[in-house]
Image (cartoon, rainbow, N blue to C red):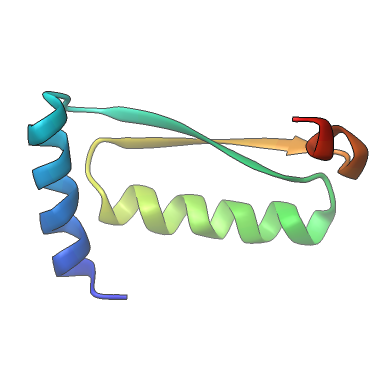
Length: 67
C-alpha cells in the first residue's frame, strides 16, 4: 500500500465531493477473528485517510447475507 498516494487521492476525492469528512460502514462477521481484523483495518484506514470515520457493523453470517 502506498500511503502517500492513497492520501493524495483521498484528498482529491473529498475536494471533488465537497466534503471534509466521510463516514462509511464496514460490514463484517461477528466472530472474534473478524472483529480483530476489522479493528486493524479501521485503525489503518482512519490513520492514513484524514477525515474518514469507519464504523464496524458486525453481523451473524445469516444476517450479513440478508443485508
